[in-house]
Length: 456
Ligand SMILES: *Cc1c(COP(=O)(O)O)cnc(C)c1O
Image (tube, rainbow, N blue to C red):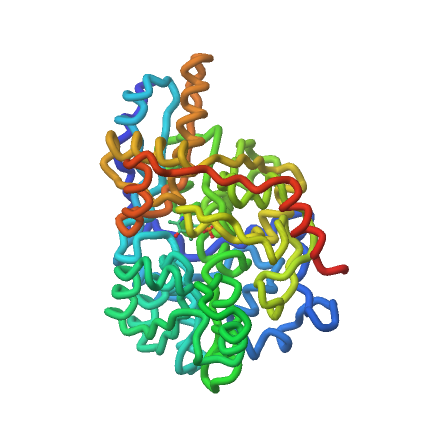
């Protein structure tokens, strides 16, 4: 039988795009642990969550049983502007590496926000609009999430208030201006606009802020202003649900050509792109229909899976958000400066944490200099300038392909290329100047942070 020639880019037709998101939790045997109310330590109910989150998103967050949730037509129409995203056969990289491995990547950087985050931002904005809200608040660190959310809010005429970590606000003026161009108001955090911000500024004059502090400000503004709710771009179950479009499209494209991956790789910050990419494959694995090696890649400076503890913890430094059971380094853990801003969260999606604890997936940590070496290698042959976050997955995909070169195995490797790195040129500059360093926390530092976990 003649093998079908696989094109460089496998595009799907519009009508091949998924019409429902896939909720992997419905097929998990051990369900992820529920969010707990920080005051009562009891599972959060929809009523508990209602002042903070949009109603329909709360339903999605708490739904462990419905396998397929229809994607509303308005969201599918928006997706059509930049989806289906291509699944690329990395022929040029394979040739350069002289590997018998077959490498594919799903590219999510083909939209102005430059990352996969728009897949969930548009869904969250849609449900906020449907509920009749005036606007949403959020935090952003490196700025990808804030950018995606401002695009989504402008599409639905919603007000968007972004609390941007002060140091990023000052160092990443271009992302800030993209957000403002889409009509969002961007406030450097900590700020004088909230009680918590004023308190932090009084206690720590001159602080350059943190993600945890920006979350606290955004939540305060959402709960104090009628018609506003808070939205989050990663970690939560609802976000992973929306990101399942990545995996569903990938599976459809592979199935079209009868390709079965051996290894699936993704970078992991809060776990949403990886969770979305692997969802349909993990579903088959759980049901015993197929087997895949699934690898999460995290930075050595923030190693939640590989060096963290599986326990209930706060999602924010301000300790106001619900408690989630996850692999965590402790909510007070401050990762050292690292250029993969989107991978600096101290914890991990509770769904992925359960799958990892059940040994259904693996995790590795990599250092940033080797990540940028991989990014450069990839950019030079595949043409795309990858985001530092995405380059964590590239690094491990290249490693696996080089192992195949030694053994002669023709493995099929699929990885998620979550975004482009055009706004990360300071990081590339550091790498090009040979000034990039690898900061890895000591066992003592991690133990000290873990010692402050809440007692449940
Ligand atoms: C935010 C981000 C990530 C990490 O977030 P996850 O929720 O773990 O997917 C990865 N890559 C890019 C480009 C990002 O912007």
